[in-house]
Image 1 (cartoon, one colour):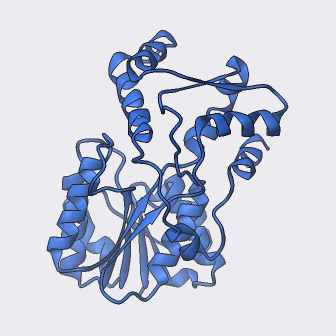
Image 2: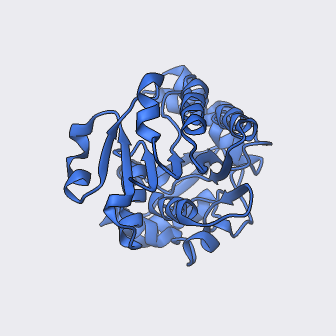
Length: 285
């Protein structure tokens, strides 16, 4: 019977978590990958990982997915507006199954931030706290990939647009957060735990400098107001709602909500988080 289960296991974060567990020496037979589409998990099955089918939107599939598991990693859903009922169904299934600990991927400063993504994470943390289960909350900061995935646009335009007012963002690559999740899942905790996770903080000016240095193409940061950024994003093809949402995320950076001085990420993974230039180099490669 598997000791650990990872939901969303065929997603980009879930796959990395399972890879980190295997690399750390956890036997494949002790890992269950909880997925919506088992056919997408053939590579995990080939490595000996048990595949369990479940859907956040179908609570009847969840008890079997967590049966016999001691520790569960609940990777947050990707459907805005549906996360709280989805997560609640998983937590209830875990409670009924006698899962010893739930590890949940939340967002940085979930209990205080105005970040437009945070409300569902805060609500999920409250559901966990009320469940009676032992839990670990991983409040993940921004992924460096939020920026490095935009390298083609940066290099084409020579510009990084932002509305951060020179404030910093504590980002780290997805693989660092996955390593932290794997460590938290296998770690013995006394009571409940909340970790604020983020890499070495950088400004958008520093991001532009890193891109310029690594690629040899000059890229500059252009800072503007939130309203002007939303307009600029609409001018390049985003609809008004999406543009406003992206601008609101930059406002969250501007007021310091996506920066942290916590060293929790480095302590969990046992090394310094991956630096910005190394992340850009990896993306460029």
